[in-house]
Amino acid sequence: MLPQLKGFLVTFRRMFKRPITIQYPDERREMAERFRGIPALRSDPDTGRLLCVDCGLCEQICPTGAIVINVEPTERDEERNIVEWTLKLGRCMFCGLCARVCPVDAVTMSAYYELVSQNRDQFFRQKGELAILGQAAPDYFRQGMG
Image: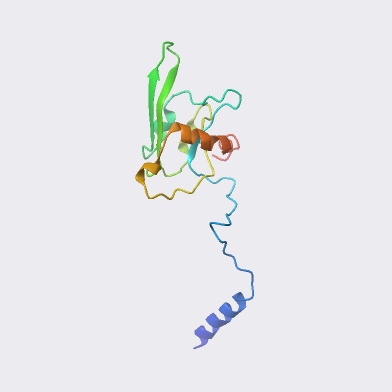
């Protein structure tokens, strides 16, 4: 009987304190500075071109194989064009290794985390969608957060 009274006492004290829950769709928590959301592609603010140099290091280091890059050579030997840069969100574990290994900081971790969908096709993100996310994403690796 005594443990039940102690439990009631805790509940009674909590009734008069401010609630700690938030109303999620209307209110959102502030994300931590080191939060790792969806990987995003950064672009040059002056030209608007992606910073990616098509080296493929992010694809190679990804432990789950969530990144798929297809490149096509150009007339110049030193340049290549990205044909496809796909992120499979169903496989990504948001570890941030792709952002750490990128030599030109073209890949960064965004603060976007709402991934709910009823359609599997929504879990495949192409370079255009990731570039839009990258415009709002902080410079994750250069901040020393990675």
